[in-house]
Image (cartoon, rainbow, N blue to C red; front, side, top):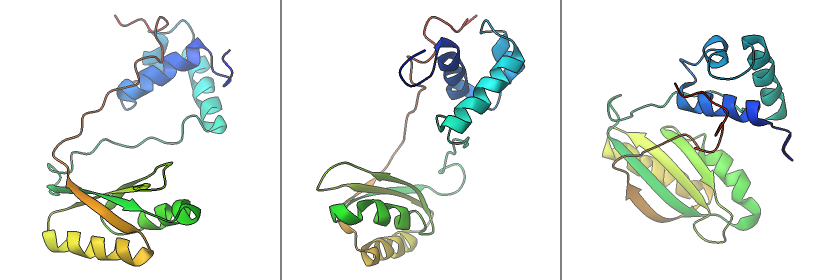
Length: 159
């Protein structure tokens, strides 16, 4: 086991869940890992209790869902209020993600989606009213994602 309490099997499970959590059932995973489906269920439950697996969310193509405007606001929060303001920003309508950064400047990033530029102005006004200083706004074209490629290396049978 590693220092974090995860072994190769756990990392293999994480790899498969990142690849496609919706279509990788414990039975499917057992075909690629050297353990039973019940062991996989137990390991997933353990990782949920440990806080390693925090949840399962769909990847949404906001443009195809009718929200073609994806705007990232790079903001600066007072360091002592950074966490509080990041959590408050997440409550604003149309905000889908907030990242808290460990820096003095541009330490909160807010991603909002919309189909109306007037809504974006309303979101910016609400962000400002929280006490976040908007440093820049970036129109996001596309996001590319991939699973972390070191989970499961050497343990997953990628037939």
